[in-house]
Amino acid sequence: MKILVICQFYYPENFVVTNIAEQLVKCGHDVDVLTGKPNYGYNHILPEYIHIKEQVINGVNVHRVNLCARKKTRFSIIKNYLSFWKNSKKWVRHCKTEYDVVYSMSLSPVTICCAGNLYKKKHHVKHIIHCVDLWPESVLVTKAVRKSSLAYKLLYKWSRSIYKKADKILIGSPSFAEYFEKVLKLPTTNLEFVPQCALVTNTDVTPYKYQEGTNILFCGNLGLIQLIDLIPETMKLLKDKKIYFHVIGMGPLTDKLIKDIENSGLREHIIYYGPMAASRAASYFKSADAIYVSLKDDGVVGKTIPNKLMMALAFGKPIIGVLKGDGRKILNEAGGAVLADENPESIKDAILAIDNMSEAAKAQFGKMNSQYYQSHFSVEEVTNKIIESLK
Image 1 (spheres, rainbow, N blue to C red):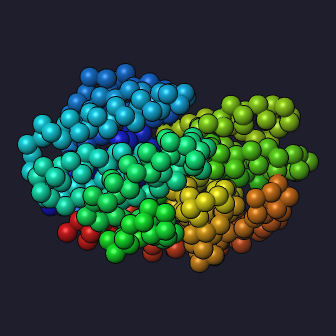
Image 2 (tube, helix red, strand yellow; image 1 turned 180 degrees about the vertical axis):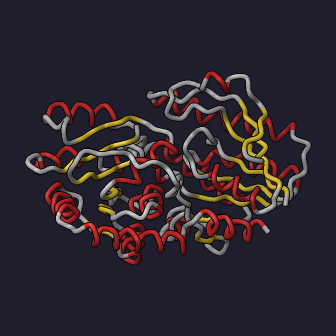
Image 3 (cartoon, rainbow, N blue to C red; image 1 turned 90 degrees about the horizontal axis):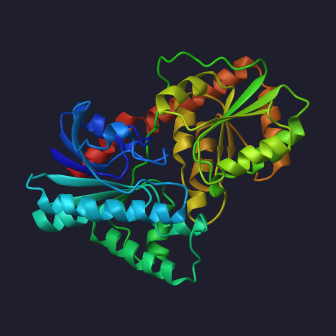
């Protein structure tokens, strides 16, 4: 098949759409990606990409449109979203290439998919949306807008219209189906559960050398729904132990986390590295004693499967799981996790359980997680399901 993949984010930005596009090529398909110029997490367009419009990366033909860089302000994020929405549709209007099918990965915002709906209308081909971030629910959970506001009502109507125009929707978590039916009032007959794969996997990287003790790793977005504020609160209770919490990532709560670490005198126990390329972060996953996966139990988003859970499973490490819904169900099935509730005391007990665990027990937990990942969520498994839907 000749496939047009649409997503605002692509390599060198850290999103699984890159893994999927490259796996589609490995499976013998001709793949073009319509994306923006890399800026997520950098606060500017990467200088080496400013003038690049076309390139080939690992067999994938990448078409990059201009957009406004995403910075820390809400206004800049809105400009970033709308600039891709506008310029991706402009690219489609001038596109003369005939594709067999369009696959859009719907991260935030859902407006990423508008160019796919336009190509469908113009060329009369099918458009598949892979929904891994629910709209407009996401803007409620992050408290970007209130449910009673005009902005939410407009986003609701727009989101519903975008989803409705797709021929099929692959949902990243089973619980999404309930949202489509009860909130968006859309039929569920064209929905199919297809999870994300891990961004990075257990490759032959050199393990990072942590200090002696028990080393817990969190890698991901530092946002409201990730319960980042509970990390310092928990580590206050463990200051007398040789237990260290390592944090990789960035997000709205970055500055607050840094301030809390300083104010609590936790610099020796919480080590913050900032954002990091997935390939480099793999070294930290490789040698961690456990991976910390958290998601606030709030609305439909709080019941979903976070991508960092996929990475934790893929690296074959014990997991400390502070989440409910689909994510907790997976951890129960995999069998390699210590589960905790959303409070420092419960999380402290889970960390101590890892700290007291023998090396053999930790290895067994990791083995069960790795086997579960390979059977359900590997890039090969996920891409094969996507290919069947695209056919």
